[in-house]
Length: 359
Image (cartoon, rainbow, N blue to C red; front, side, top):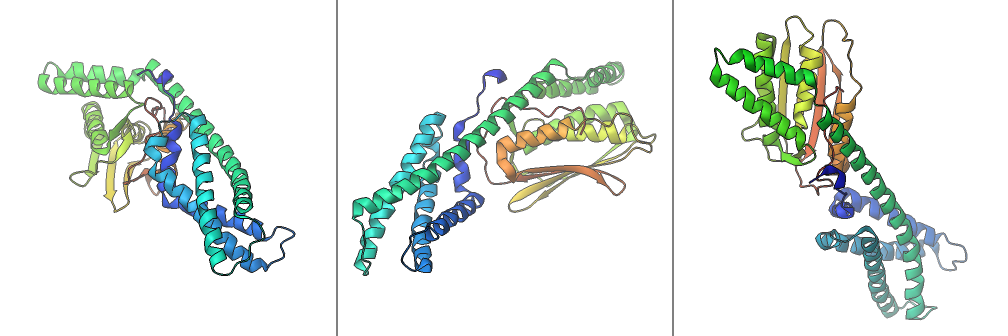
C-alpha cells in the first residue's frame, strides 16, 4: 500500500481506556468534576456530604463509561471519527442515565428526600455529562490531529529515505561484495542477500516487525560491515535465547547500530567494540546499543533525525509506554530502547522510517 494514501485509524485512542494510566487520569478528572459540583454556589446541604455523594456518582459514571469503551474498542475502532465521537457521547449519556436511575432509587430508599423528580434529576446530570463530554471530545480531536501530524511527518521522512538511500553505504557494500567474489564466492552471495534484505526492509519501513526479525536484520547489516571494517569492528551480543517477540516498527534497531559504527567506531584508528545488550523483564524489554567515542570530535555530528524519527514511530505504536534515550556515557555513547511487553494497538501501517542520518 502506498504510504501517501495511508490514514491513521481514529480508533487507536480506544485501547488507552484499558490502561491503568488512563483509568487513573479518568478518576482524577472525575474527582475534579465532583469537587466543582460540591463547591457550586447555592448549595444548602453540607458540602462534605455533597462532595462524597458527587464523588460516588461521578466516579461510577466515569468508570462505567471507560469500561464500556474498553470492551467495545474493536467495534468502535471501525467507525469514522465523527461517528466514533457520537458513539462515545452516547455511551457517556447512557452510563449517566443508568447511574442516575440507580442512584435516585437507592438514595430515596435510605431516606434521602429529593427536591426534584427523577426526570429532572436525570436531565440535570445529563447536562453536566454533556459539558464534560464536549471537553473530552475536544481533547480527543486534538489528540487525533496530533497523531495525524506525526503520521504525515513520518510518511514524508519515509518518502525521503526511499528517494535517497545513502549512496556511501550502497557503494561500500557493493565494493566489499566485489572484493569477495574471487576468493569467497559463497560469502559474497550471502553478503548480497543481506544487502537485498536491508533495502527490502527500507522500502517497507512503515510496517511492523518483531524484535527477533529486527535482530536478524541487524546481524545481516553487521555481517556486511564486518567484511568492510575487518578487525576494527568487534561485536558483542548479550541476548536471551529466544528473544521476546515484541512488536517494533521496521528498522528500529539497525539505524541505532549504524549510527554507532559510523559516528563512533569507524572514525577510530583501531576501531572499537559494539555492544548490543537485551534485558528481559516481566513488563518490558530494555535494549542497549553502546559504542566508544572517536579520539577527536567528528566533523559530522548529525542532526538527530534518526533518534527523533524512531521516537515518533514508537509513539505511534505504543504511545508514551515506549522510550528511546541516547547520549554520552563514561567512555562512550549509549542508545537505550525500552519497549513494553503488553500488546499495543497499531497506530500506523505505512508511515515512518528511522532515517539513518545520525542522532
